[in-house]
Amino acid sequence: MKFLAKVYCPMYDHNDKKYIRLIIPENCADYVKRTQLNKAFLIKNSHVDNPLDGRVLTVKIPFRYRRCMCEVKGKPIQSLIEGDEVTVEIGFAGVWNVGNYSGFAWKLLSCTFI
Image (tube, rainbow, N blue to C red; front, side):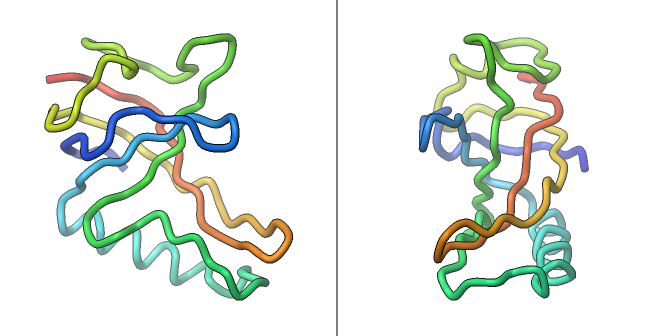
């Protein structure tokens, strides 16, 4: 799914993985909700990590060997700051269940700084 988004929180580390939070359009937020509802039957635990908070979506950045492993045009993802507008393409990466926690995962496929 490709759309125009605004950076809410720049790239950050969590459990040795890189994430970015984006403010997404309302119609994209509805699509994310529907996709997650369709896969909710795979959730096994009571503690659910929902990456969508209102219109703010937490997206995983595929990051290995000290660089982003997806297509990036314009400004590097590490240099993006709060309020930057970017055209992003994201994909649903599935449901995860670890210990007492479950959640949904969205990953970044491409990012273009406008």
